[in-house]
Length: 307
Ligand code: GZL
Image 1 (cartoon, rainbow, N blue to C red):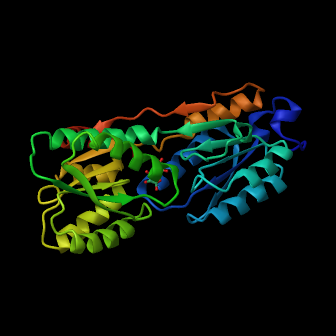
Image 2: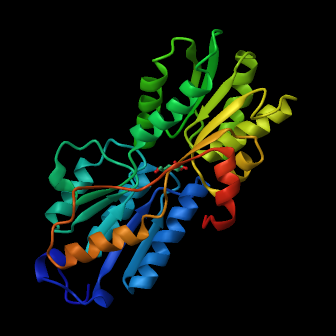
């Protein structure tokens, strides 16, 4: 900021003097681009300067970006950690520089909670449980084994770890439900397509694909159709996010159920930043509001979908 030091030290600054550094994961999915757009719009609206970086899903790039924000003595640093581990060193550097850090979207596994002011984002275990519950209900009366392929998000990322955990916990209630193969598609459409092509060959009897995000589910649709099968019928698909392309596939019956994960974190991030600027202590954990969609609900919701 203009007079040096961070908001936490010098007392409230006029919002037009605040400078915030944001280290984004990348642009790997429709969810991520919607998240970026929403954050940039929120800063525009609030008149707060935003320094923004795209790490192409590489942790070393995010760490470099955070270090550069520390050098520039920004007032607040915010970021979505691409993976849970390996942040303590750089977060301690931000702490030593007196720069408050806000986690958005994904979490870190640091035991030292003084390293960040707040964590704003979804409950990914709950998202996995919601997906599992739909599968449990869908196959409640089935006496035959149900073969499930899981397309995991980025290895080591909080949403990938937690969505797998929540899903496994719920489907364990029915021993007929079995995850026969589970592999990362890195949250991308291309990754989802490649992994599905390979796993369909080794698991020709698969009944359902659980993808940790819409983009990998959309890639799976391409692979299923290329194999001459009908997505949503021959092989059911359950995904997480509820971005427009996913919701369209759900409305078209190619996906069967979507658990929403809201990317619209911008307004709440601004709220946290203004609280920090005013010397207030924001909530440590702020969980976003989100729902689920069946095909009928997607058809209903699509016209008003912002992203
Ligand atoms: C979840 C977010 C995930 C999305 C993916 O909050 O971190 O990353 O589910 C995105 O689409 O790539």
